[in-house]
Image 1: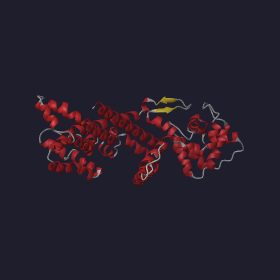
Image 2 (image 1 turned 60 degrees about the horizontal axis):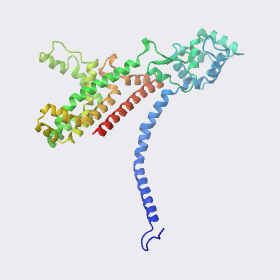
Image 3 (image 1 turned 180 degrees about the vertical axis):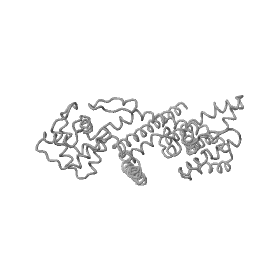
Length: 414
């Protein structure tokens, strides 16, 4: 290989210098984005990971009754358990450092079998229980409470002895494990979450459709207005963002009540003879959610419509197409990305709504997020709350994946 010409820099040294400069540039870019990455990790990814972990975590029985779980391991979950399990449950409850641990165990078992809470707490209050051997421990427990002879309580302990479980996720889909561990569908009278999930998606779809029907003409009108007028009207569109959701919901309560402005206006015009029931039902929920989420549909549509050249529509009309047909065949297809983005945004926000259905809806209008809050704040069943939250998360990711796939296929066809 020929030596480099005199006076010219060495190509290999120049290449190393460029590589160092590129590394420094990447490090500076990474350093600038590092605070944002840490923020996202701490406020978004970590809570999601904790949520998914709590949805499959089952620590109460495993932590409180380790000896009992081991004693029940060879049991076939039929008939009475071995005598060693009676001695083990006394030892485990005696070793608990705090009554709160017994309370957590009692709540967990009571979610499986009614009456387990009083059974466990009764034994915990009766401690210490002295027993010479396993048979003596069994006799003392049965003397304390005869329910210790019933297999269902021991089956609940054996079933929940593993630290990790899919029971919460199964319950959120109306399935369960029976006493022997087989997965089965819940009885008809206990199948609630399937209907709640369908209701959540149904209300969200209705709200999304209404937002699209109301937002598309408004976004189109804003896109064809002069810039000054469009900016003024856009401020009116953005005003709801500056008002609390609770304030807007309270305003709708005033408007929609039997003696409110809506019923008063309709009765004054002679449209109706008596007030319409617009509160504490599905109608009030849809009206308020549509009002709150309408800007999230208008903004994506407006941004896409502003990028569509108006000459396309005029050219189609000049070539002989009727204006209405030209609008739907030439203009509307170019706004599909805005329709998809707005519909996806509104739908995803809708399926997680809690405050509006809780204040304006009835018992049959509550969405899945209401039950997440119920399990987290009232029944203190974090596993079930996390499982229902995981269902919402998975649904959101599936919708986003479908949207990306549809948009990618449209771009490839275009």
